[in-house]
Amino acid sequence: MRVLPRLGLVVSAFALIGADVPEREVPPGEGVLCLGAMIYFADIQARSCHAGEDREFQERLSSYVERFDSYLIRNSPGGEADLKRFKELQGLTPEARPDICESGPQNDIYKAIREGGQAKVDVMVDKMLMRDGAPSFGDCV
Image (cartoon, rainbow, N blue to C red; front, top):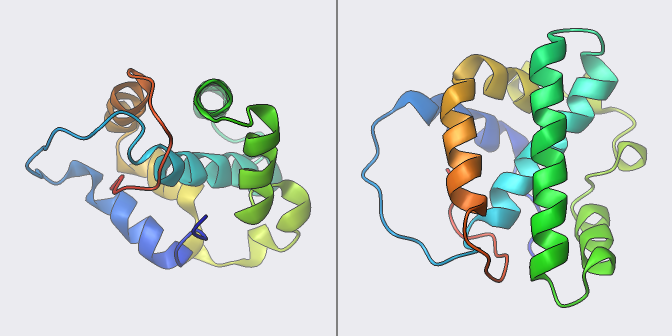
C-alpha cells in the first residue's frame, strides 16, 4: 500500500477544487483510498486543531468518515482489519499524529477543504462512493 503523498501537495490539490477539469470515467473504487486519506486527515485536524470551529462542517467531515469506513469495510477482503491497517499505515489516527497542529498552514487539509468548496467535496465524495469496487489510490484530485 502506498503512503500518503506530501501533505503540502495535497493541500494545493484541494485548492484546485474550483478549477474546471475534464472528467473521465473511472472504475469503481479508483481514488477511494486517496480521497479517503485526505478526509480522514482533515477529520483528525478538525478534532485536534479546530475543535469547536464550524460545527456544521465538522459534522459533515464526520459523516464522510463514516461513509468511507463503510465503503472500505464493505469492499475490502479483510473488512474492518483492512480498514484499521490502512489507517495505521497511512498515519491516519490521532495517536500517529501528535504534532498535527504544528504542521503549518500549508498542511491544513481541514482548512483547504472548508474554504475550497464544500459543495464540490460533497459531489466528489458522493461520486466516488456511489459504486462498490476494490479500493485503490488512483487519482482523486
